[in-house]
Structure formats: structure tokens, C-alpha cells
Length: 193
Image 1 (tube, helix red, strand yellow):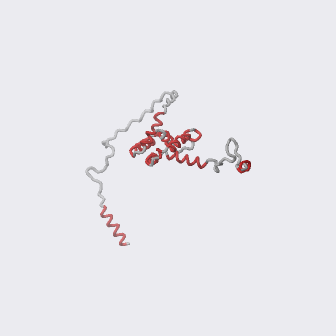
Image 2 (cartoon, rainbow, N blue to C red):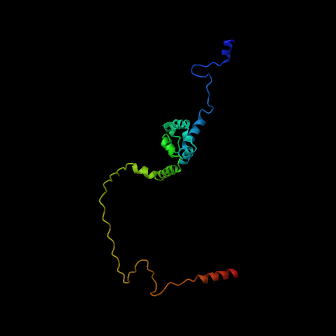
Image 3 (spheres, rainbow, N blue to C red):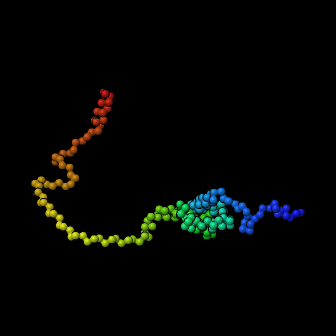
């Protein structure tokens, strides 16, 4: 056989790689979005429990994928993360003991409670660790002026009543309002009118 004919049929390859390397049609945008979505799903302890229950953490390729995803902790990628707890859980998932523990429902509930209490007290905890600033020194204020004297109170000849006491004739009570009579009058007016 002619070896020169076979060589002509083969595409020529350069030493650095194939002549036409694979070109991603959307420049990696879809891969970026899929990886971002998966990483952010790790913020949910129930999802991590699901992965553990379905034995994803026993697959070495999946463990390698979790290690690969740690690039999301770099500043140029972290700005796209909306749920920062996902990075915390991604870090914890690098530990085999945590992966095994998340297979148990109690561990899932514990992680969920801890996450809830973190969110509940986040503002207080953040403010607690901020060093308080000293208050600025107040400017020297002028000495206070004495208040004007009050005019003397006239002496009343009647006895002073304690506050909230109803003034009326001694021994008299306020008139009673009989609601039944007013209702009867209304009904009569409606029938007559």
C-alpha cells in the first residue's frame, strides 16, 4: 500500500494540538451559570443531605468536582455569589467526616438551625464586634442662665380636687342611658317611615 496516500487523507495536526480545537459557542457562559447555580445550591443543608443520601459523596469524580469548585472563593468570582453560606458549606464538604455526617437527618437539622440563628442574629453579632468609637468631646458651653422666677399662685378658697375626679353635685350620679329605649325608638321610626 502507498503510505503517502494514507498520510494525505489524515488531517494535519500541529504539535500544540488539533488544527480546529473545540470552540464553545457561548464562550463558557452556560458552564459558568451552571456551576454558579450548583455552588449556590450548596447553601441549603437539605440539598447537601439529599446528595449524601443518594451517595454522591462516595463518587471520587464528584469529590474532585467539589475541589475544583473552590475557585469560586477567589475575588473575581465571589462577587457573583448571592448566598455566601454556600462557600462555607463548600469548604466543609472538603472534609470526609462532614460529608458522612450530612447523611443523617439530625445533622441536616442541626446545620439548618445553626444557619437560621446566624441569619437571625447577624446584625447584632456584626455590630457587637465593631469597636465602638469614642464620642467627640463636646464644645465648652456657656454657663446656663438661671430660669425666670415663677409668679405666685393665687390661693383658692375652694378645696383642691385630686386629678381625674368628676365634679358634680355631691351625692349625684351621672344619668343612666338606657340603650333599650333608643333601639325601640329607631325601630318605630323605620316602620313608620
